[in-house]
Length: 297
Image (cartoon, rainbow, N blue to C red; front, side, top):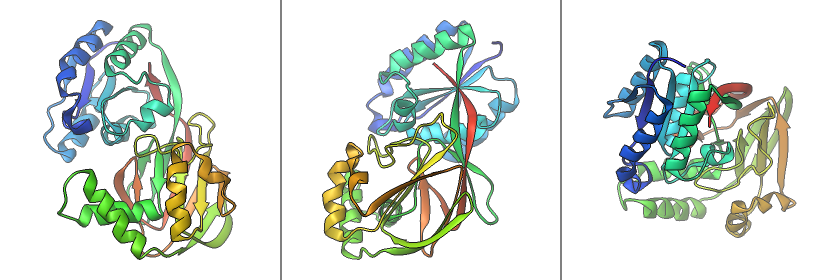
């Protein structure tokens, strides 16, 4: 490879616990024997623009140092291109990295990326392509939430207090009180179903939220999307929460799994979340794109 090794880093990822490791990560990446350039971006919009600029101007590879949100930003620039991509897991949630076999320790991940750059070694990994009426395509690597979890995220983002994880705990409590099944129209490769659901997730990978295996059958190398849908009561939902970390919630008789190349979802009053980031309101179409990113390491 020739050109620069361009790095997008989020020093606040993982509540800043890996901030002091960034110089070591950059040193390890430099073992690829290419110039390493850390992108200067103070906002998400600036980071997005900087990634696209690097991709368009001859970067050898793009590396994201952070959690799933940082990976999500970088994927928008590399998806569907030949530009190699590396993920150094340094966030609260590192689901894309974990599910694609990246070393869990940031320094080890950086070393693996450097070695892959030197040898020209990449692996094809699938991504999901999200579209909606009047919306530009958006890519995601892990999971799209379009049920209770999406509603909780939306509520949490509207709260100004408390800060940190307790804001999500409050959002969960508030939304549990008003929990009701939504009416969805779901099309799987064109086969339409109209049904009620509380849980609805579409996975390219199995987990989100830092190890919640909400779509446990999803594999990011099979060219397919996996869908989990459940119409459960408030009490059942609470009891299922602990099982989602092992993926055993899908054994519940009212939780169903599907697999398709294209998934279309319609419902009222739902804004989707992908890779933990706010995405598009329903209706949306999600398409599996085999080998959409060339992963280093």
